[in-house]
Length: 196
Image 1 (spheres, rainbow, N blue to C red):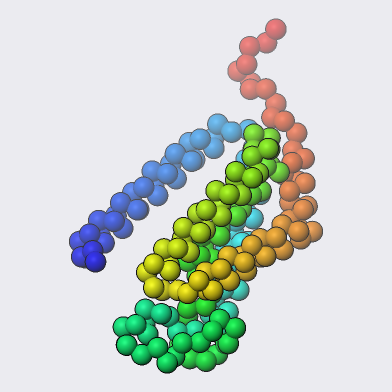
Image 2: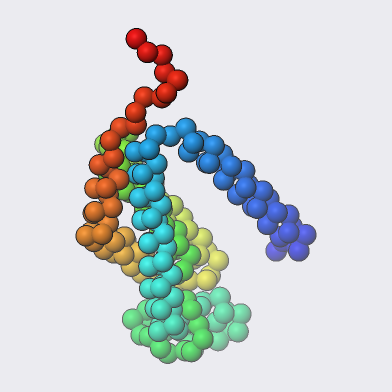
């Protein structure tokens, strides 16, 4: 287990990397045309909506289910508090079902909207889908290995988040936002472009 100084160093490194990445993205964004920025804006809003849905739904389910974590029972040496995934409200104060980390990893599902937004991504839908679900599966596997979740916790989180993503992308508001992002005319030529 890392000591406090390692944790502090990791936190500092994360803050510095976030700052550097933010500066890099802002620098790159200033070079993009208006239609591309509108499409990225749509993608960001979709990501925010999915994140809000994740936090509301998954945390509400955790409160209702109150499933005891495996590693907590293992530490106590008593597995009598085990409950199957379909039985909710058995042990107050526990939050194993569904997996919050797996649900958060499902935030990558917003990348599935890239082919609808950018021509470069068209035809790469299968690879994009496989990449997203591989990342989600690795996150779920890490939670299983750590003993923090059961397989049913992680699978349920992935299924719930996939359904939330599909529900969000099929709302009228999302479709209108996508149409608006795609409807922007191409950027006019730069003012300093040579004239013939």
